[in-house]
Length: 192
Image 1 (spheres, helix red, strand yellow):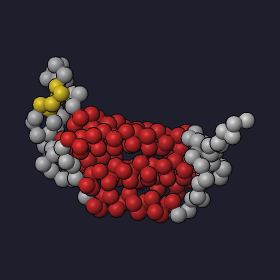
Image 2 (tube, rainbow, N blue to C red):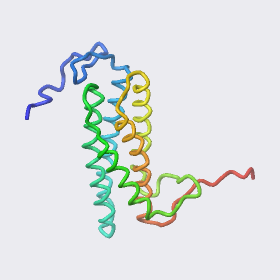
Image 3 (cartoon, rainbow, N blue to C red):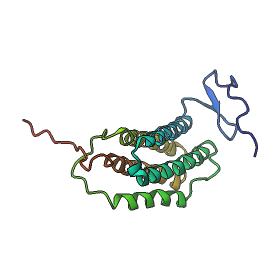
Image 4 (tube, rainbow, N blue to C red):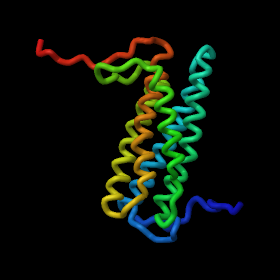
């Protein structure tokens, strides 16, 4: 295996440009670099979610382990996704990747009660981290869609990010129900 990062500081980006995997130099403000950065941030936020799982009581170890496994799989796939963004001539995100997320959603959502209103985030630390990851996933998706409008991307890449935010909503609900089966939901202002 070759070393990818032998030097962290190269001083080549001081003028506001960076290189992507193809060797092409791009402005750090370009849509492609923004999308790569948002996907990278999502990966880091999933790391925070994973760390927060350590605070879950051992009585809920099955949920913790399932969510941890999901996070690890997704973090690996996000490197593939970032690689595809950084080397547009390659396709790394597959239909199998999308199916993994869809299967996770279907399996876990089947055990959750239907919602009548929006869930208010913050039932516990891990659930709040999952909601944060969901929001970052949506932002990453918006960045990638913006890039897609300029430079066509694979349908699997787009579908993966779209499903991922849905899956993270399911994760947030699973984790939020650990301490209490009551999920705080938005209450409409009735004008009183």
